[in-house]
Length: 91
Image (tube, rainbow, N blue to C red; front, side, top):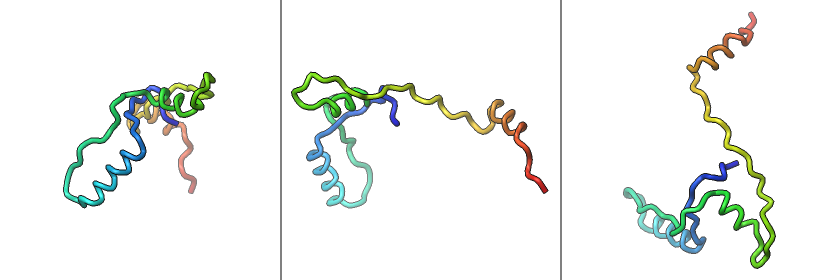
């Protein structure tokens, strides 16, 4: 699941296919120019457009949920405390 506020630049599939063909034809050899559409939209906006049938005024059935919190480093105090509560290996 992607956060709905994630920015992206949607592109036409034909334009992207031509870009990929050009990359393959050029072969390996370094950096490529970034590729993206002219509009910057959130993932939620793109999903809303995708789910809405052309010409209908129907809304989206997109289920919005908050992004999960970032993972804590293994050395965080909370992780150390959780590890201390776990039973050790038997034997």
